[in-house]
Length: 111
Length: 114
Image (cartoon, rainbow over all chains, first blue to last red):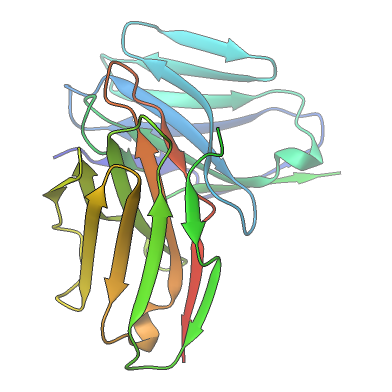
């Protein structure tokens, strides 16, 4: 089955700097890669996703990149703000099967 | 759309008691997932349903856990008897199968077993 590794487990950046979180997956059949943000005490919320027919996707200050050959995908947050502080989860799925989640990255943005 | 609805939001119970968690998925979503989240184990998939039918319950920790989905708009997760190690946040999530894979989470139920 699918296995998703996520790095780093914790990340601290200065406000205004960029943050990058990386994930690798094992199942070459996976074709859907979402990212979730979970604030303290809240539910995981989908913030961006990418499908395997696309190499990059942007939404304002966040972007995801996908390298199918290397089986890795990354989340990039530019101009970080204190409200970006949260736990971020990557996930992978071949489609209509359950998402397999990474262990999460705790991002702290220091003002 | 109200999103995924879960109840109760918080539950405190004593060891040995029965606990029932409830979930209403987003209308039109035909997949429903139950997850458990703890600091130690992260986000674990317990069971999921497609069109009200349980597809994979291999994540259910033991026979004390059971889940049902009697119709498209309601599911329950029951723990009987509960134990302190069951303390966690339980999330329900739903997803539409027809070409879109986005999965949406409910607000969760924080369960404390004393």
